[in-house]
Image (cartoon, rainbow, N blue to C red; front, top):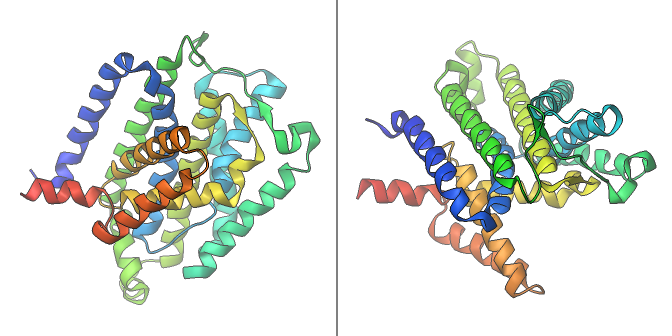
Length: 311
């Protein structure tokens, strides 16, 4: 069985292990839930990176998904997790479709900076809207599933389990997507767009689709983060948030759809404990981790698994 065919079994095994051992480590459930939610956004970045594109503006959709769900709960009192997920995904997808008509024509630094510009525009708008809490943001009501609250101190496992299942489904869907003709175009577009056009495929159309998928995944990650933390603010659209996603993408590598979630968990782990034991120099720990990864694992942490598997 090849590594590609082994991925669904690997994802299923990881899901089962996570759901079983999580109750044993309740103190890690919150951190792991956040890592999975952010890993969803990085999963979209993985798709763009395989296509040769780097987006510094995924915070736009991460924030849009969170605010869309938060506004629905704030004004209409809707807390059902499935409704919130659908709203966040729909809003993010619609905005990505509209912006994609412009961004699909750009490459390289222009794509990266233009995506960042749109994210900062949203940040600038949100800090001016006092009805949404301005720079402070606002609290999000605890999400419910079939009328039962699934977040908070007494029900954190419910939110963790839900996020695990969604992460599994999204990773599995992306794995299937990469095996489709459109998904297989990603490395071809990265290597030589002209040849792809000669084969009869539309590079611009393919990039547009991939951008929409990445934006939708970021929106889902945003609403899951909002439901976990219970609060949203404009910082979710700030450039440092988008930078974190790029950091995790480089740290994890693009070798497998499971890599973003592993990288996000390690990132959150390093940041949490570095801040706990060295609050004034915690950024140094993250910088050191990135430096070591680039020097010894330039293809990301997932390449270490690939090396061990071949031994």
